[in-house]
Image 1: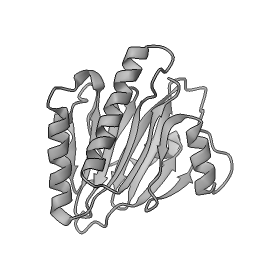
Image 2: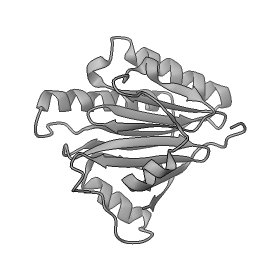
Image 3: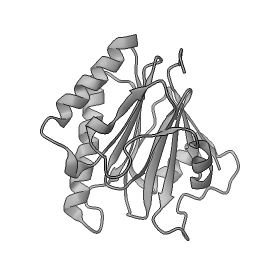
Image 4: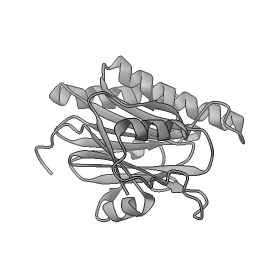
Length: 209
C-alpha cells in the first residue's frame, strides 16, 4: 500500500467488529513474541492482540506504518535506545509522525502491584521517548485500571483501530449502546477504564460497533 497519508484517525471498535476488520491483516507479535525485535514497519495492514501488562505502539509517518507489542518482563537494557532509533528513523523519512499507544496497567492496580508498576513504567518510557522526539500527534489510551480487558490494536491505510478482548467473555465493560457517541463522550467513558487518556487535538476518534 504505497503513498499512505499520515494517520490521524482513531477508530474504537467492538471486539466482534475488530475480529472482522483484521481478517487478511498481518498479525504482529504473536504470543509469546512480545519484544521490540518482533515489531514490524511496513506498508501492510497489521494488528496485534491481547495486551495485558504489555504496551502496544502504532505509528505512521505518511509513507509506511509501524506496530509493536512490548512485554515489560522481556524488555532489555537497550529497549529505550532501540525504540528511540526506530522513532527517529521513521520521523526522518518524512519529517512527521503520528502515534497511538495503548495497553499496560495503571500504577498500583489490584493484583500483582509490582507487575502493574513495571507495566506503567514502560508506558511512561514510551511516552517520554515520543515526546523527546517532538511527536506532537500522539494519543495514549493506556494503563488499565482493572484486569478485566486486554487491548487490541491495528493500523491500516488511514486509521489506528483500537479494541479490546474481555477476559471474561460474558462481560463486555466497554459496551457502547449509544449510536455515534461524541468525542467527549468517548473520552469520558475511556477515563473510567484507563489511567491515561490523552487524545491528540489532531486525531479524530469515533466508535464503530
